[in-house]
Amino acid sequence: MEASYDFGMVGLGVMGRNFLLNIVDNGYAAIGLDLDKEKVDALNAEADGRVLEGTTDTDTFIQSLSVPRKIMLLVPAGRAVDSVIESLLPKLDEGDLIIDGGNSFFKDTNRRFESLKEKGIRFMGMGVSGGAEGARRGPSIMPGGVKEAYEVVGSILEAVSAKVDGEPCVAHLGNGAAGHYVKMVHNGIEYGLMQLIAEAYDLLKNVGKLDNKAIHEAFNSWNQGALQSYLIEITADIFTQKDDQGNGDLVDKILDKAKQKGTGKWTSQNAMDLGIPVPTIDAAVTMRGLSSLKKERVSLQPHYTRAIEEKPAVDAQEYTSQVGEALHFAFIITYAQGMHLLAEASEEYQFGLDLEAVSRIWRGGCIIRARLLEQMRQAYSQEPDLRNLLMSSVFQQTVLHSQHAVRTVINAATQSGVPTLALSSTLNYFDAYRNARLPLNLVQAQRDYFGSHTYERVDKDGIFHTEWK
Ligand code: 6PG
Image (cartoon, rainbow, N blue to C red; front, side, top):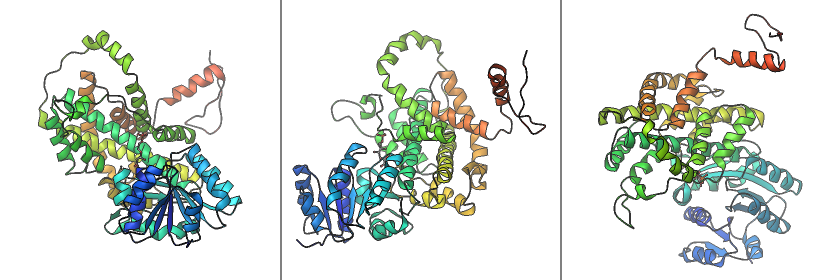
């Protein structure tokens, strides 16, 4: 058998198949492996004269790849990644490269990296964002690991990635599990933005009294301005979709219970471990949890509905523009939280992240791509060691100005009983973070009072304890 394929993919689900077709479209010869014959047949049916093959046989797969072999896995995160690696391992040669392109937990990536290193096999954890369409037409790609390993596949990844102003949306992001860590935070930000958009929808619907057509128009107009982004764009589309199984709009028929695969929760959990506040991502995870308590919510509603008075109608146009401005503020704060976490993690785990590169490769292809990313890129290009975007002059005027809209929108929401856990979290984060003195002096006093935990003073150095009463 001639070893002639440039690239191999294990896992021919929709993401794996599309990524492989993208590679082949860029002039590379590629082979896919899946134990499911139907998926292999589906890939072969798409070959259409291109140098592309699907197989269910691991030996054929391995022997057809030119060395050093470049093998990417797009299989569900967790056990499946380990078992695929175990099955390939005895057949690989030193210097071959395995790339895990799934949403793996970054600590698993570290473990796999170390254990494969001992065996002379190179391993890269790589985030891929953009869904099925992104994989096919150009995703944002977040590889981490050893730079030399990246160089083995860099030209292929650059060819298949999304491009913005001619620049590929891929870069070697840093050491170890840097790629999967960045993808995890990407998803945390994604959770935050999606929840903020859902709250804006709730506000337009239940405070602004807008119908789906007007909500579509609001999102559409926001997408022409500072909020321009993939998530705002698809949200505008969603409001035009008719129900194909009945009357009315599809959005009204969808059950309000959001599922999750876990990357948002991991972001919150790890941010807690590192002591970096990401309250908007926390709020988004919490709201997915609250959304799934559907039975309890349904049973509580009749007991508490009367607590809220009907409010007079607001001016729809003015209100829409206020909500848009509030959303702009909230988007900036959400990215700021995620990037702050990346800055800290880069030090803690010695990833060596370049946050300008992260902003650059998120400008296209990924789910959180947005006009804002270009400004973020400028902020990091001016100050590569920026701890938090709120410290950059690039955002200060916008944040100062738009905070007023958030205050107004949240006031009205509170009066009407519309929940804004994520939106409020952005304002509360801002109000706390910009404040030189918080009331946590009192928390220190309490800790010292009941547990002799000691405290520091504002007027002299040292550690103090008081015999309170
Ligand atoms: C992407 C997405 C993708 C993931 C969704 C679903 O960047 O293309 O992040 O990786 O499938 O985010 O995640 P949840 O099921 O947790 O919502």
